[in-house]
Length: 247
Image (tube, rainbow, N blue to C red; front, side):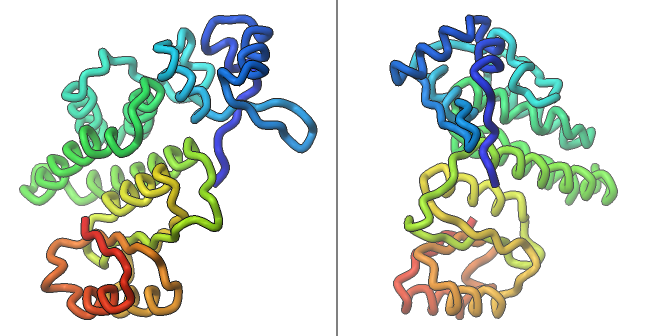
């Protein structure tokens, strides 16, 4: 998944400064840029976020780097963001589902904090509403599909992993909440791991084969009761000295 890259002109417009200022900051090392095959300088969203955080600045014209998202500008309070995300899940509003974590990311929060403090809490509440019969099957599955696009979008904000770095497998046991597995994969990527996402359709036998074949350093698996559902997998990972995390 490639990073989202912007020209110095676009970054300048988002900050309401001159393009010359952006180029000067890049030359001084205040903002990281990379060169394309054509020799043009491009700035990743990750570099922009780092600059904003280190210099205590905010975007003046965020719509320039919002890629068409009608971002919802809130006060930045976590509870408000959580409530907004939950409402978007209920309404199947893909734009707001994407805008909430994106706004928080641009405000300087890392994905791990965004997921743990906002998205996961909203998702737990949403899933309970579904289990209690307050959300019908169609609404739930529709928002579930919207979420997959959100995680793909957020993954594009991260830098590419070091191919020689530690390798992690991530997935969800069939019947488990796949959204939590998606978030776990992005957290690991943010921490520099090389990851491979195995989806949510494999049973324990499938993960046993994956571990034996791919020999990861780490396995993160979303499931409800690991002790009851994956005894063979736990034993194999212990034998092979593979870190295991159940989510």
